[in-house]
Length: 462
Image 1 (cartoon, rainbow, N blue to C red):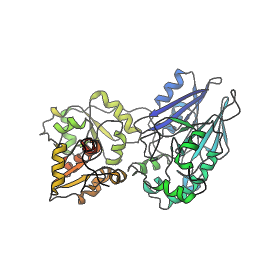
Image 2: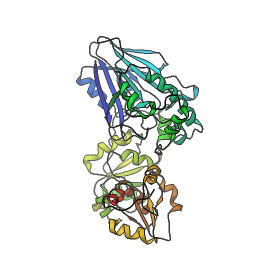
Image 3: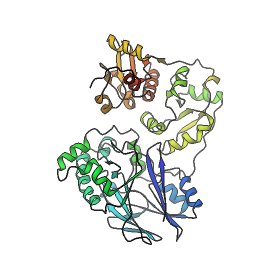
Image 4: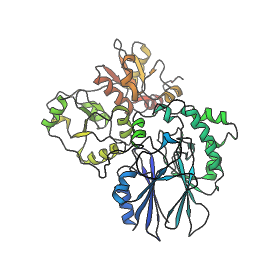
């Protein structure tokens, strides 16, 4: 058996390529949209991708299963569980509980494991030349290392009311199926630490059934379903805005993108023409460089591992945008965005200093200045972290306006007082600062944020 775990650290998303070296066949599980990674792995290991499967209709990334099927000719196998409202709306081989997919000498048995979503399935792998016992289970967003999938996404992200309680009930029942598996079976899930699909995902990439039974919080409640449900639904992070679009695009027929696109590098004249038309400018430089001089009304969304998630909070899928970035980052940023289906890049531009525009500077305050402002009571202090972070400890007097939705809360930002913002380490505050500046607010930023505040021994309140 050949096995490779592919981890996209930008979305904390796992996919897998598993092959039978005897037959030369391979299967891909939960493919990302830039599919060349799987083609390269298969080619280097003399394998042909013949099967493609998904664990569920994903909400956090745009699956590349159909792109990969189009390029390879492999068969696409998807869940037909969950009822008529949860069916994929394009051609595929349907899967139901108990079905078996054979890939050479390997078999993948389907387990219907609803809870995260109604159609969710897991795949139990047996490597028959070695043993007739199962050796791995691919759980998607059902069971993670140390956590389980959240059932509230359909309600919070897709607006389908009343689904979280039913999802919690289904999850409780599905976990009993998982607990009945042999304890030695390896667990390979759809996400790792950093994903918004759970609240306490472990950082290690895999586990075993036995380890999860003793370590995962979800198995500590026995038959007490009410206590389990309360714990499961409490404190889940706010799902990014783009999740609703992913849920739709992964379910319906859509245009395919089988190669990583190349977007143009804009000239100064082309940039200025687009800028004057109102095309949104996204500056992906480090916040420290951005603060020294930025294009008026641009947004500072740094090109880090969180770039796609941050873009998913701030952008919609209709508007075009220009990315300011170093030329060697063009492909990386394009890949990050195509993984969430954000393909509307007008072009790239490299140096703001080449523009015939008066650049602006951010107003950054030190920890001492921030403390003085906060103590004065004359300014509005805004914590732009999520609600659970704010409740765990914040600067006294600070109000909580989440950076991801601050564009919708501008009426809550003071126009009469000085405004100072902070987050955990400064990156999300940089986004919020640029949003507020774009909307005409004069805002100061404590870039060191809670990390520096705590390191300086300053007090926090709950």
